[in-house]
Length: 247
Image (cartoon, rainbow, N blue to C red; front, side, top):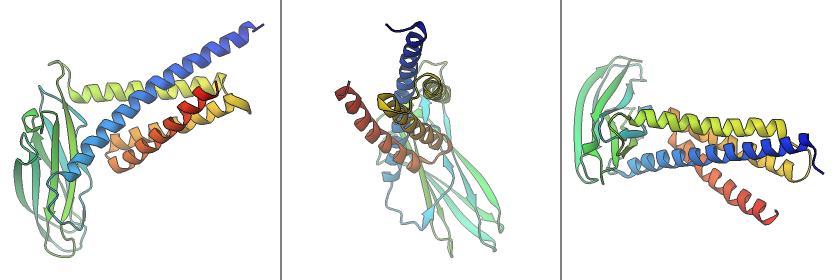
């Protein structure tokens, strides 16, 4: 017969699995959506040959159809001489083959940096749901040509809901679910052997990958987020069948 204490531990383990599954699923959706948008931006206007990437270039992950957003990039002169630069922003104009081009000419002293911002609207979205932006810095000399890109997903949300608000709400719910599930499991599900040990390794391994991927999308490192997303998919593909088969 199961004691009251063991029964309580079982219920708490079930709660931890529910929280973790909810947070992990939401986190994978957020990471996947962000990676999809940023990957598509690398294919947009891909004819320019570059020497290196513009870092950092920032876009909101989500934008509602009732608001405007900002694409920003920091342009630096990392040499020890004064440089004249041409900064171009290419933004979709309702279609992948239609481009809105904005150009600025600037002069930067050695070590100087300047932040640029370009406004985007839902009308810029290709296929009605994806704004793609590319920033190109043209420079004669050793710095060469630089390019960076990012993508924004446009959603039809209620007028009072902003894309950034929805993103951070989902981000917070996912983080709480993953961390809460891991914490409860650590206190009530850990074991040094058997299926509980396997479950502990699975939860903490997958949870760490998802939290790392979410951190990457928050700071704009979509390439690392893509790696975390694909590793997460592989882990899910291994973990779920394993526990279903060995139940």
